[in-house]
Image (cartoon, rainbow, N blue to C red):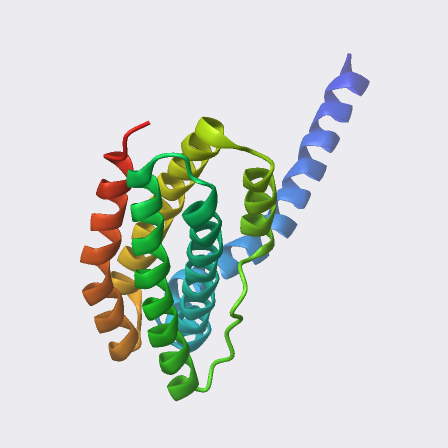
Length: 185
């Protein structure tokens, strides 16, 4: 019995030693995280703002590419009209994003990201009413994500120009989202 209780204490002591070895560095890390957070956020702001421009450019390029397909493939006239507006509005928005990126010295792509290209490929396989439904669902999904992206930039961006751009673009994106939700299927 005594051997068993000594074994327990030895194991418990070893556990305590391990806990002390792990807890010390963890406490230092957590303290550095909280105490260093303001400096880390300020240093990361340019990368975050560049990421916003990149994501916005890719999302807009996707809206244009997908809506160009809908201009010719959609069955319902209301959906074709919506697609015309998306191409016009998002092409103009792309020009604004590219101009801002150039001014900031940030390189942005003018092509949709891989996820949007996959969605576009799936959409291209559909016809008629199935195409219309998938296009409208995609416009609702994409505009919901775009509104969220621009809301984040409007509230979190360290760059005054990008913050203002996001704030002034949000009403249009919200209107697009509501218009997509109202499309007849």
